[in-house]
Length: 358
Image 1 (cartoon, rainbow, N blue to C red):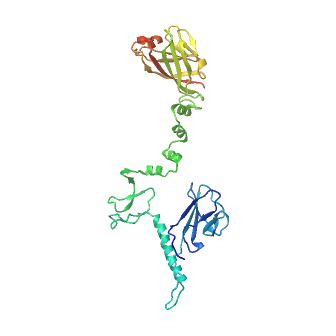
Image 2 (tube, rainbow, N blue to C red; image 1 turned 90 degrees about the vertical axis):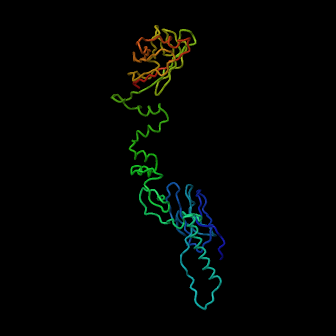
Image 3 (cartoon, one colour; image 1 turned 180 degrees about the vertical axis):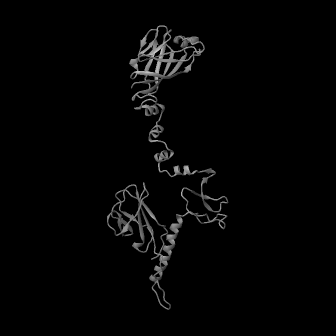
């Protein structure tokens, strides 16, 4: 034969669970020279199949095709390569005549051997032919060293094992992180417990606190099932004079109250009560989850009134009651006076954290 096919081995095919015939895209001498390898993409596990073998790992060759006993599944590949024997079986004798086929077969085999090497070289790291320092560059790899990176030495003429890359040192501990196969293994190496890992993937503060506190006793408390909650209470000047508008929203795990406009002194609307003297605002127990056990913190987050105030929150018969003392004098301020100051339209917002029984 002649060797005019310049296609280099190997040929690769993706499995689909139905195809069994795979073309051998390059020239070869004998069926026994063909090497078929099955690869599982997800794991990298390789299995060399057997010519004329039985079962899932067997195949035959027919009409220039590898014919698999069983179609490779999706997510796998079939690699068809060649290993031409590195032997010379033609024994030429002096003063003897030989057919053209004998000489041609010997030359064909030499060509295929060179073709095989070209296929291997095509998959190898190579220097460019135009590299100026070819005469001084080393082509030798250093002895493999676990956990080290391969890189150029200080004079850029040989490869060596590196413990740092671009000036960044890699400690032995960091090396134990770099070989972790996935995020869970990385976290375990760092010593982050499975419970803490469940916190790190929470999307927001509300979810974080739910994960942190849900189903667990509060720190320093032996009672299981208690829940830490937080709300923000926004008080605005109401549509009607001498009245207020209140909105209660959750910060995390907190109770919510619909925005309630035109609450007058001494009135209760939507489980929100404003005292007759205008000094106290109460969130009634009927609008809260479980029984309120205690207040864990409170502060003023927004104050447009012009009067420097703090907020005090307390539990009263399972209700939450707040008021706003003047920071300097301690005098409790009329809430309407705060939001109606300077012609009205002012806003005061308070943050309250509390614990409930459920």
